[in-house]
Structure formats: C-alpha cells, structure tokens
Figure 1: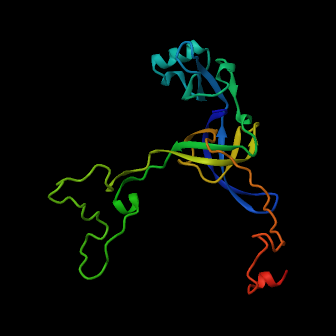
Figure 2: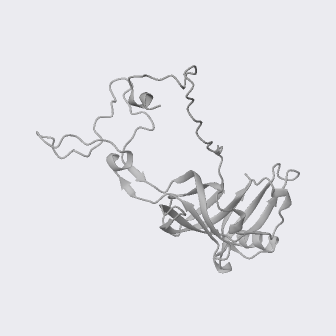
Length: 241
C-alpha cells in the first residue's frame, strides 16, 4: 500500500458540494501517528513500519510495552498498527505521519470494529423470515425453526445461521473518496459511512480497488449506413432526426 494512517471516528454530518447537493460524510480525526518500529527485509524478511496513535499514560503500560517505546525513543501510545507501505524503507523511527498524507479526491479503504449488538436472534442477526402470525402459529414466530437435520447426516452443518453474538467484527468499507482534509485539525472527511461507534479506532489506507475514470459518452452517429444510425422508423426518436 502507498498510504496509511490511524484515526478515530468523530461522527457523521452532511455538507454541500459546489453544485449545491447534500453529501453525507464521516469526520475522522486522523493522526498524528509516530513510527514506533521499522521492519526491514534483511532482519524480518519484509518491509513495514509500525505506527502509534494517541498518547498513553506510562502507568497503564506493562513492562514489555514500556521497553518497546523506550527502545524507540518515542512517547507511549495507546494503539499500534503495522502497515506494509511501499516507502517503508524511506521512513525512520520517530517520523510523524499526519492527515495531509491524504488529499482531497483520494480513494481509501477504512477498517474498523463494528458496533456490538449483544446476543441476537436469527431474524435480526441474519435477516431470516418469521413464521405467519395467524392460525395457531404459537409463540415461535421469531424462532429459527427447522435446521434440516434428518437421519442423514443427523447433525447441523457448521456455519448454519442461528442466534448468537452480533457485531464487534472487523469490517472494511472500500473505495470511499476523501471530500476534505484539514491538517491543522487532523481531520479527514470521507463520503459515506464507516464501521464502528463514535470514538472508535479506524485504519485508513489507499484503496485496493482499481479506479477507472469515466469517459465522456460517445455521440450516436446519424449515418444510416452505421448500426448506431439505423433505427426503427416507427419510433418517435427516429422520426425526429
């Protein structure tokens, strides 16, 4: 990947673009992040950097964690994340990555932890359908129902939908475009929603999608010898030429 940064979800709002259209956006407090560790091909077998985000009190660190930051010579951080950046070899321990690493118009992928919903049933968790509510349905309208475990195989296959803990999963939303960047406020504004609650930690990196610029539509030929110019004379669109 070319760019990456750690941030915190502030919340959603809406802004107006140049055409006056409403754009739903998410505000992210991104960085500043400090390079805590640098990994090289010669030592670790691959090139990467470990970024740290948000200052932490030393009294809350374990001895191994404190030693890790002391070795790097940087202030203690709450959150650490490793990124395999293309320019990892150019970065050094102690370098700071701020919000201006991204610019307006960039396409990014945002990874976060989804909101927790506790223990939920099959309808809310998987979108299952309830049973009819009339003619003696009984108190089982929202139950999972038959699982199809007949005499063969006499068991339920793994992965079958059912009740269970919902949320608190790693979720990545791809190909969001950056609407605004404010380095002074450490703010990145992206179009659309991102996973997680307000205050949740998110990871931003350039998208893995291939961005194809839309070309202008080609005009339809009026030459009757061409396929695009031949039309049904019974249609009103063909008679107006």
